[in-house]
Amino acid sequence: MSDSTWFTEQHEHSGSSIGFRVKQKLHSEKTPFQTIEIYDTTDWGKLMVIDGCMMVSSRDNFLYHEMMSHPALFTHARAKRVVIIGGGDCGTLREVLRHDEVEKAVQVEIDERVTRLAEKYFPELCEANDDPRAELLFIDGIKYMAECEPESLDLIIVDSTDPVGPAEGLFNAAFYTSCYKALRHGGILVQQSESPLVHLDLIKSMRVAMKSAGFQSAKTLNFPQPCYPTGWWSCTMVRKGADLAGFRERGAASKQFPTRYYNVDMHRAALAMPEFVREALGE
Ligand code: SAM
Image (cartoon, rainbow, N blue to C red; front, top):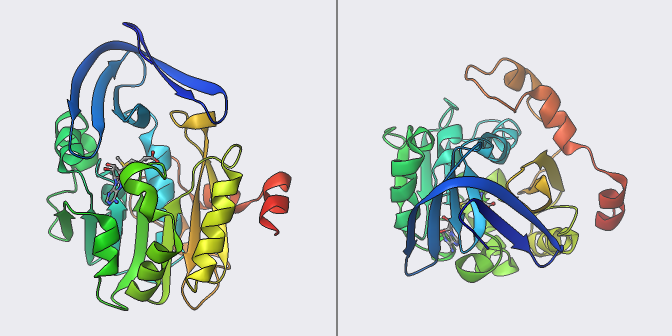
């Protein structure tokens, strides 16, 4: 719902809403995949909305992008080949490419218009797009993973929209089986897994589907994200052929690049499980 001064996203599922005060709508278009809107807000910078759901604001996207990338990259011993599924705003790609050990990062976004609008309205998120290690593809991530060379990847980051529309098939066992095959031994899959407060059933079913695809231990990491439903978000990480105990704390403590949210303490904190989540996930 929007009026002239507020963009408000209503969440039927949780009976709640989140709103940002806006100065003006800057852009709106219907692509073959979805409707994309861009707003200029009074306090949160630019805001990208897809099919009525807030995707990225200038002010708080660092929380999500840093937590979708650095915990996985500091868990893997040396991730050389990375694939990002979705993530068309390019913020996750930028964070991944801060790691010198990454030799190649492919962003597989179904909708080229998301990236073209990010280049125009969120240029800071796209500043690594010209990095020679980056490749931007505009195809369906489900098909890309199904056809991916076996045992060729170290890390897959699924930075997708909610599990409806084009992203629905990114949350099932068939997709996770493709990811499992494409990963090398010790490879990691990390996927945005919505809000633990209202989407625990989804997190549970993702973990069951990931396990059925062959993945062993799973960790769900918590972090704040004001522009997403409830303001509390998560990502779920699984690994091929190895468990997920610990991370490279010394490497994270001596990282040679700036972050605004991620550090060793926040990484440890993100791994802590609230009691109701622990119970629901049987941990
Ligand atoms: N951070 C956001 C969130 O959690 O709501 C996600 C942002 S990112 C813009 C999500 C992207 O996933 C969108 O640009 C969308 O086009 C893309 N996407 C959805 N389904 C996809 C698919 N099957 N293959 C590749 N990209 C897909």
